[in-house]
Length: 333
Length: 302
Image (cartoon, rainbow over all chains, first blue to last red; front, side, top):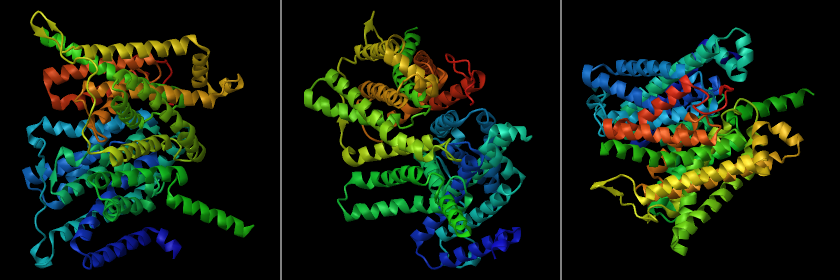
């Protein structure tokens, strides 16, 4: 069974079954949960993009929100000006953001750790504000991004959010499936080699700069896709949809998922979506002043971030694997 | 003509505040090899503490001093407890390179939302200690007031004190030694851990000064989610990197240069291009002169 799950077709089958389960689930929960499900799917794509960059290629980005913004705006422009079909909007978002990512990545490959972190932070602050400068980007109000009502043959009681959930889930499943295959390929191995030891990787014949730029490009493409999904669920793109807190939230999600493995990606996405609900529940229970309601989610997420970095720095999934490995060593002794 | 002079003056004062933040970042970087993204949060916290002291003693100057001491204490505490634990637990493995960045960001979030939880929503203002009405020269009002003079003066004084400390005292020698080579410094009998904590403390004090001076110079209002403090962090970082991230003089030069460029963009081109200009300046400096305008000749990539 394990062998089958690790094979190419095994993984494909797994994703198809997962998609079917999600489809069944979406019929049984209420509207709010369906909306949250679409957000989870968006976060899954965004976080996996960050995991690819940070965990697999060792570059840290505090400005993924800016890449999401590029994707969102590209998709909205394609929809509004060329009335592109839905799938083409996503493709445009991916291509545009990947191109931007290739440019940024070329610069980023020359920077390490804190320099890259700070530069991407400056990008996250700077990029969304450009929208105010150019008329075509719609200024502070932003642009509408309307993917239209669900097709009529899905039935009259098929809601808008369910339609969004379907699109987001299918897109996320395909993206993760592709990404898994990339990470198991030559490129994935190269990235991990570079992350572990740049000098050793270079000696083994890997062009470190190129490999980092490629990782940044692929990661940016995924981030652009996530941006288009985010724009879809909100219905608009505007500078305020991509605040600095979004970039920080994504990083938190990546750390919670365990930056070194893709398999935990759903953990971070679920936590990010669930935190506001949990915070609401807590603040309703106790003194519910405005202060508590607005600040509790942030406090919970940041505390969680610190706890994870201190206690399970490599993420829960990796931690479980280490524990299991240790136990099996003990058994054989 | 007057517009040009005013632009330069605005650049100098905003640059001076970026310099203070850059100095704080440089101090931590030199002693711990960590870019402290929580610095803005610490500055915010110190400014709130300073505000409480102003309410109590009705003196800006005493409050400034006390806020700097409090900022130093908080900062030292963060290093001695939090960062030390972090390096013990996450100092190896694939996460080691990014763990300090993530941890200080988490700290920033905790400080901000924690402060918001306790004091958020209140209208907190710090009145300028001296007049903020511009000097008048032959009928024209300049964008330079006694308050701005105070800001620039404090940066110069702080810079001077820190330079004397680093160049002329034994503690400064120990600080430099442990930054240059922790291993050898330890062999020579320097308590490297203590020096690192001291570096953090100095940075905390500088950050507190930046927060206390920034608030009355800007809108005067203080709020946990104020954009001004996020910008202080980003612009402080850019200023520090322009200056090479290693030298205090570099931090001041970087801060003034950044302030000047941004002032020119703000007044002569467009408000909405300010942030992206800052980013562009950072990238250009990093690509053309990766060691910073003033800094060691060693590459910064390692």
